[in-house]
Image (cartoon, rainbow, N blue to C red; front, side, top):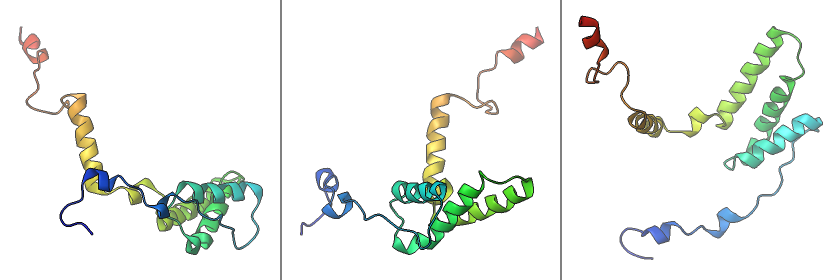
Length: 133
């Protein structure tokens, strides 16, 4: 083991455990075709999910697919709340995967590139001078 800080080349090496493909996950109960597509997509796109998450992903897939088959707004509201609770528990939503400080830095960097904000006091307003004439 080396002493001191790791170099950039040491950090860029990807270990063999992270490059392998995972075994396919199977739900505990049979799913309809649209539910199964959502189930497979969720596991494929979110590498942090494990086999212990299968029951929650099954519920998420059923709630998501159910949103496309409902007729009334009341049913939609119930399923949407259920889907959101599964997504939060599984950490699928963006807010659960992005640290607030890094998101704030990203927004601040974007603001600097887009120019001054309308409410900034230090901006150069020629409109106020034209109104006085």
